[in-house]
Image 1 (cartoon, rainbow, N blue to C red):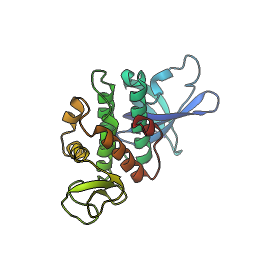
Image 2 (tube, rainbow, N blue to C red):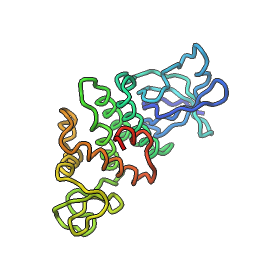
Image 3 (tube, one colour):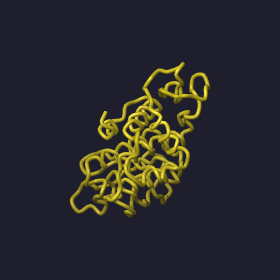
Image 4 (cartoon, rainbow, N blue to C red):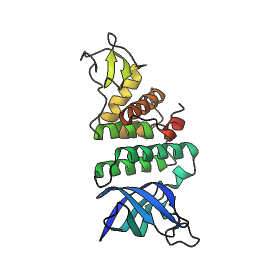
Length: 241
């Protein structure tokens, strides 16, 4: 048995027995970690709310031969209170946790995913900012990290360079007038996705939701669901689907 220290975000928890809880975290050095928090459901537990989903933490844990680690110390880095206090922000935050939970594997570290998640949660937590584009932009960035970024600069079916009028993730991205199928796509939505994936994300998130934002939210959600081959629960509420 070895003692490990890591930083990560709590993705979800579920009960174990009468007093314990299993905590699923995405960590920088160890990837997805499933760990037991003993006695955490008892009154006066030293962990308390430190191991709730949407908490950025530093943990100390024991890892033995079992797939379950045992947590013995938790320090909170960020709690993201503004997300917790607003239903729309909460749904967006939970949808991002759900995506990370689905794409990540135990023991396979990807610090880029953790960094992307933490940055997105910080923007979502900023009470002075508009937030509708945070989750859709996060989905597109995660698809990019996964090597599954949608094709946006040529027809995903025939390779034509435009004009693009539709989007179908099963074919890989945008489609021209000759190959159109799937969801219609406006030029505003296309430009917005190109900005998100082309390095202009900070500007996209800085102001009011740009033209095409609602459309991109729908497209990004469907693209992520196609990649995961499953529907996302919280995202459907966030995107108004």
